[in-house]
Image (cartoon, rainbow, N blue to C red; front, side, top):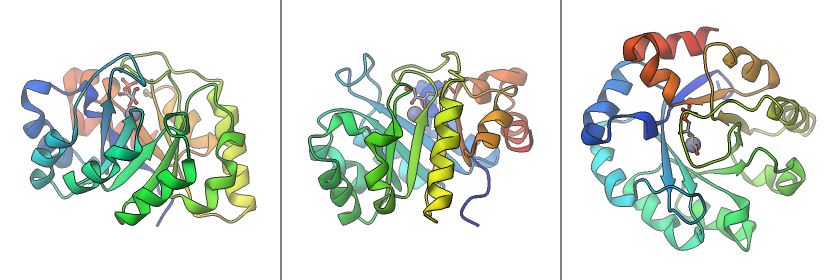
Amino acid sequence: MRNSIKISPSILSADFSKLGSEVISLEKAGADYIHIDVMDGHFVPNLTIGPEVIKKLRPLTKKIFDVHLMISPVDNFIKDFADAGADIITFHPEATKDTSKTIQLIRKENKKVGISLKPHSEISLIEKYLSEIDLVLIMSVEPGFGGQKFMPEVLEKTKNLKDIIEKENLNVDIEIDGGINFQNCSLAKKAGANILVSGSTIFKENKGDLKKNIEILRKN
Ligand code: DX5
Ligand code: ZN
């Protein structure tokens, strides 16, 4: 069923000295997707991993690679991330001169298309593309770092987006990303998110019991 609740742990909070075994542990712990935060130190003030690392992680799991590109310019890297094994490629509209072109570039690689909205970016920035994409990633923190505090003001935007998707009978998932924890996960779902990204809560709570933490986020 398209809109069942899915948990997408962010490996930004994983132990980078053993990313391979961390991804395998996430699969064993019941993760639905693996959220991979790609940062270029230009679009956001942080630098993480690129296509070569994703290529090495790909054979370790069949789980969906939910790749969040916080890079600009983004177009010239779409094919590299697709070839590396991304399944969903999500970009920020502020990172491209032509959103439609970037959508087409991802489609051409037969990958699912996501567009991300920063906390203060309005739905109007992406509304006209909703019929062409698979997922909207609502940022509930300013992109760039894990472990930040959830910004509850994005819940209203999430509700409004859900209303538009339902009214226009579109098949678009809503993923929420940033500061998701055991206390606010139910608010995110009530607002309309059906995919929850979490890094620090999943890797740090309950002494890092991945399975328990994923289950609590899914059930609450
Ligand atoms: C931030 C990333 C998020 C972040 C989530 O720019 O896009 O995916 O890693 O981590 P937590 O859950 O710790 O906020
Ligand atoms: Zn992310």
